[in-house]
Image 1 (cartoon, rainbow, N blue to C red):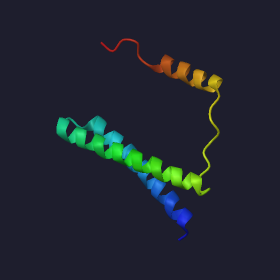
Image 2 (cartoon, rainbow, N blue to C red):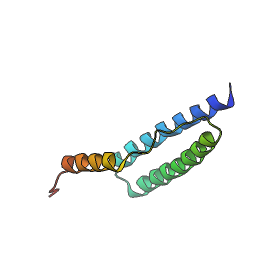
Image 3 (spheres, rainbow, N blue to C red):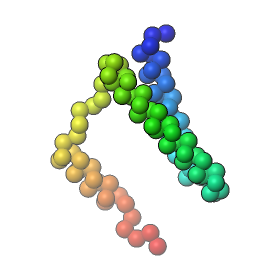
Image 4 (cartoon, rainbow, N blue to C red):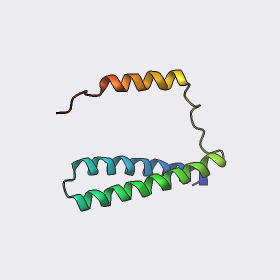
Length: 88
């Protein structure tokens, strides 16, 4: 297996783990366990970002171009419309 394949596989697996932690956090009622999951998620996010930077530097990963200000405004507006205005 090539180094690039290994790096990309680890990035993919870490991304999946982060998503799983998010699900566990939202479904966990025990505050201590919830905090533990948050710490584990935060650690995986930092690891994923560090590995992503290595992959990008080596040319293994090419991120999408940055969004324009217009695109960011459009997304923000769309998300704002979907959020409930009164939670109580």
